[in-house]
Image: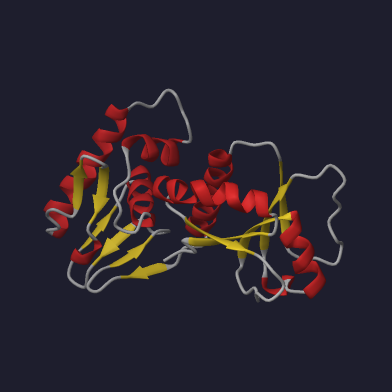
Length: 220
């Protein structure tokens, strides 16, 4: 449904080793999968969005592989680095030091928000989902979400049938708003589940597990 895998091209061996130790943990915490690759000039690039360090970017510049790249999140650990003006990709410079989890969290949120803004109709086996119209529909029935229900539903879909914790949902939907508590989230989830069950007959579709909330899209 979205670009739910982001390639991380690292040319610096020390940084690669550091990320190798924690990338699995990060992937279990964030709704985007980060694919860590030690980059050399033999690898062709055809990804619209990547993460790269300076060593990898220099190889990208050297081999003119940047034509297919729309956006580069650049890990900058050099004080004297200058971006080659020939690169047409949008470059988002992330200066070190920064907490690694915060960095990957930012990238994941950017990707999801961009996807939501450009989302078209998503087709499942029997149902279709239109994010912009806030509508989940079948040939014989449909359900229009409230704005917040739509955000929650889209966020749950982005986790590809994996459970998402209350804390993560609050963070993704309400963006660290300390005025929002779990009771607010639970109220929205309860309302959403009841509508899915009563109007579409989707029982056991939105599940509350020990690990958090999860959608069973096989029912769609």
